[in-house]
Image 1 (cartoon, rainbow, N blue to C red):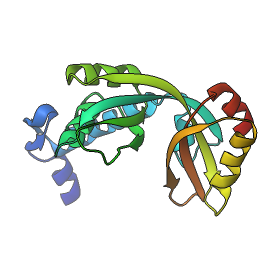
Image 2: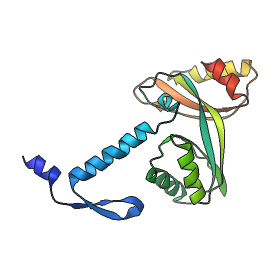
Image 3: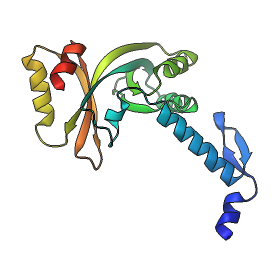
Length: 187
């Protein structure tokens, strides 16, 4: 009974949009957080199942956004926070170590919403197709994939990736010279 009272208890102040505090009961807060999670799940774009442990695809052509950002303290935090405010989930991210202005590359679940955020921040953005490939998490798996591409005269301009914890798999984002051909070869 005490736990029910705590959940339904008096209004408390919680962080809201833009850092403003809002008054909500703990139950209302939990409901609102569940709604946001549901929106993120429903908004997942084609290919995003590749970037989750339960996905069964091995390759997908996805949109990558490259936004030019000043390399300064807090810039990435601001960008990520603004995307979160409009329920854009970052599925993959590459941030180079570079002085001045550098391209931050993102694969997101809401390309159009992310582009609006970048516009509102005054950040220059470009869009390109990339390959998202799931490979096994073992020595030589990435070498085998990139060897296939090289043998078919497909250049890898850059790549970045991450391990999918607990799955024995990794996801690699590849910017290649021929996206359509690479997608067929990697399957």
